[in-house]
Image (cartoon, rainbow, N blue to C red):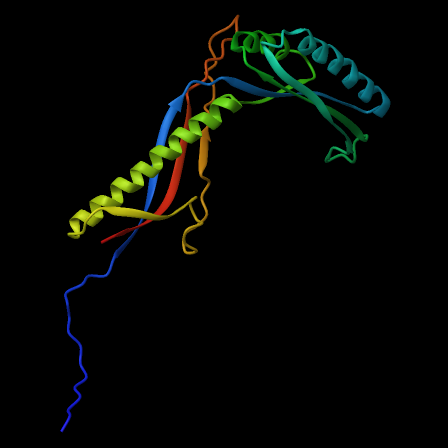
Length: 229
């Protein structure tokens, strides 16, 4: 008589351990460029007069930027014109219709002494609105800095995963997936892989304006999945 026995034998084989972590890297870099926004902003009761006054104000502003050396101003533009009307409210009745014209000017400075001198010339000028100044590193250096930080973020993720694997009694980890934040799994909110903090510059005492930007803080994060035998 032949007898067939079905069964299984456990050989003590462990399944690979899957580890998902987020690696991060952060560093500070000196500011290399500043983008300042201004506008020739004029209002009054006569539409034609208001428009002409705004153009007359924008013309020397543009001429000043054109006259600066390219090493001081890498680019500038004046490509936005706004013309609108409104009627101010008055408890005694409607006031005359007012017109407002705003011509936007934006310039990118790489010489911060020239930027300070430029703003010193125009900040007190009637009709000139000075907006925020955005500080940043250069475009070429940003790409280089990002590349270095991404490598550091991957190294950070690998170190975290290996620490988990060692604590669990496993061996070396092997990366099987790398992704920008929010792309590896669907249950995490999307995050920007690169953040830059733009610090406001302090305002020293008159008579001369001096802008001194804070360092630019760049941060990179990466999500990584590893397996450990």
